[in-house]
Amino acid sequence: MYILNDNQVDPFRDHSNSSILAPVVKRPLKGVGRNDADLPVVGLEGTYASRDGKPVFLGVVSENFKLVQMRDLTRAAETAIKNYFTPEQIQTTKIKDVSGRDGAYVERRYTIKAISEAVAYSDIDVGTTIAAELRIRTGYDGQTSTGCASGTVDLVCDNGMVSWKSLDAISRRHTKFAGDISVFTPWLDSAMPGFQSKVNTMREWAAATATWKQIEAAVEGLPQISERRAAAILSRCATEVRNRGYNAYAVSSAFTFYSSHNSSEFPVKKTGNDNVAVTLAARETEVSSWLASPAFASLTQIAA
Image (tube, rainbow, N blue to C red):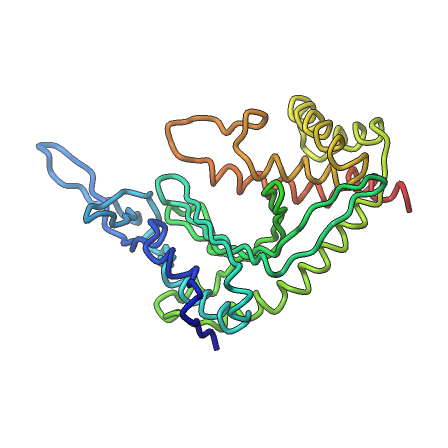
């Protein structure tokens, strides 16, 4: 039971009015024919968020598209989190909301700072602290599935690494969801063992020393990476090895910097739409494939 005393602040309450929780509705679309006559658009509908009493257009979806309200997802998830963690652990939780395409993509991140582990780098007296991170997302333009993720975030540089799992069952039966917290029980049950496993893996990466030539070969051998992107990643690797040493963890940190930041090194293209969150989410998927590739494995196996 999550019970606050008079000296504790509820981190969830502070984010209860976030714009990502605005209610979303579907409405029929209409075209304009001769003499300005309305023409129904068969099979498609528009999605709209209500903000400040005004409708905000989010996208076009099929008439069978099932809306999942982000406010319902976060309410159920946070009830499950309160039942799972102690009040002291929840007090350390940092909540961050991100959105893209004017709210068509929404995501909430929970960084549990009380669940953290130090990662020591090989051969140099430098380290960092990795905290557990939980995420929930959904979308309203037919391009993003409802999902939850668990993983890690570097408390020094804010680089994140998570694994997404689809919550298609919620999408299929959203009208019956009604804040059912049971769907989040497996999410939390697997998150903590998964976190410890990831930290152990990172420690192995930190112990896997490599030469610059070996790092170059690994980056240039990553799946579906362009010559230009490889050069930019190697430039970031040069920064990371100066701070973290010549090891596989430094290379992974360069990857996650790329997927976690809209920076001068890896700028998100300005297209007239707020697509930063969506682009970074796509980069996370890309980085996951890099970390699972034989090219990156070649670095971790050098010291084996």
